[in-house]
Every structure is written in C-alpha cells, then in structure tokens.
Image (cartoon, rainbow, N blue to C red; front, side):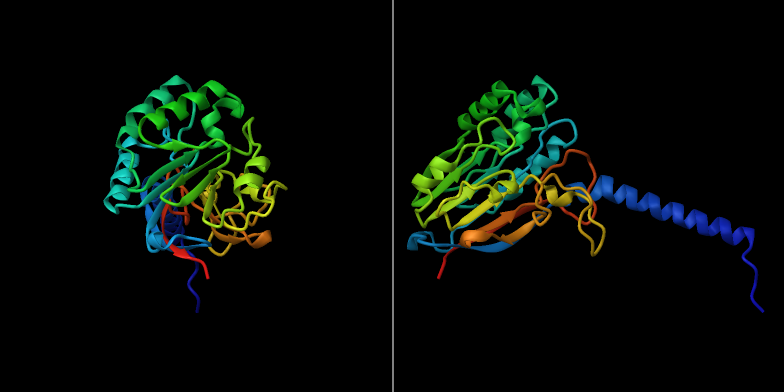
Length: 284
C-alpha cells in the first residue's frame, strides 16, 4: 500500500529545492566567475620561423576592468600569466567596462602589473573601450595611450612584426573605425601572421582577401551561462556558431574565440573564464 505524500515530506522537498537553488546561485556568482582556466593548445602557423617553433603565446581577452570585476582577480590573473613566462602576450580588447572617467584611472592603476611577453606584447581595442554607445573616441585614445606607456603595442588597423611573427590588429567591428580591407590586402599574405580581432562576427565580412591564417578573438565570454548540452541562450554575435574555442572558417582560415577573463555581470555557469596558452608550431 503506497503512503500518501505528507505535508512534512512536501516541506522537505521544497526546502531541498530551495537550498539547491541557493547553492547554484552562490556558485554562479561567487565561484565560477573567478575560477580561471588555462587552456593549452597548439597554434600551427604557416611560414613560422624555425627559432619560434615551440614558443608560447598567451591570449587575454575581455578583462572588463570596472565596477563588476574585482581588481584583485585581474591582478592575480596577471601574476599567473607572467609566471608562465610567455614569449608573446596578445590582448583582444574590452580592457574596461566604461561607466565614466573613473574606469580609465582604474585601468591606469591595474595595468602597471600587466604581464609581458619576452618577445612581444600586443593589444587591440574592443567595443567597450569606445565608451558609451561605442562612439567615445577620446576614451579609446586614452586607453591606447595608457597601454602604450606600459609596453603594449596597440594596433588599430595596423600591422606589427615581433621577432619574425607578424600581428595584424583590427579596430573593433562595432566601433567607428573598422576598416581593415586595405591593411589585409597589403599585409595579409605574409604566411607568418596572426590577426587579432575582438568581435568574431568580423570573420564573415568581405575584408579578408587572401588571408589564410589564424584569427584570435573574444567578445562572447562564451555566453557566460550555458545549460548542459545546450547552446548558450545569449550571445552578442550574429553568427551563432561563434561561441568559444576553435572554429573553421572559409578561405582556409581558422579562429580561436577565448571565453575571456572578466564579465559584464558577475555570473558564469558552465563557462569558466579562460586564458589560452598557445604553443606555436610551423603548419605542415
């Protein structure tokens, strides 16, 4: 004979569900946003010089220095990256979450501890580095100046070669100066090249010419919250394939999208923050 579902059992069930929800909420708020993961991958580059074989490149994206991300977490991330003694460090934008001049000064303080590559430290801007509505040119110029002063070679639709490896840095897709077609036409055929571009949707624009190498991107945060076995419900991109990780593109190009370090809202679930550490190899 089956026992009826008593009131006490009902209360226990509800209490258990409530405790479970509270635990998940605390995890997504207090633990995973700062549970940084270092992912180790091989980055095959055509035409890579023999002396760069096996060298490492650390990719940092979406720091979002500002009101939602603890400075102590960013500083600890910088320390942990520097301990790995990368040969190159590449930053792919969204250095800050702009709410006012205070964030620019916050950036100035924090990046004095920024990790540097032994052979080169390169960066670009993201949409949030252009301030409100991505149109505040003075904010972007201030950020660029601050980072140049601490040893980051900032690229805004420009190319730069460090120890035989060329970096092409694109200005942000949503910003006012995205215009890389001429640069890619002139510089993109060098086989030893890596493109830095904040927004992965740029991969679908008709600007790439004959470029057939790697593109390092960020912007998506991996969706920040992802139900198990399902795609993330919210992504700031048009192409829903562009979530995180390695993506094959047309024209023999490939893209790696970092899940990023910081966040706009302090919440992550099943999408840990990430710093990829690439080992450079000559593509065969």
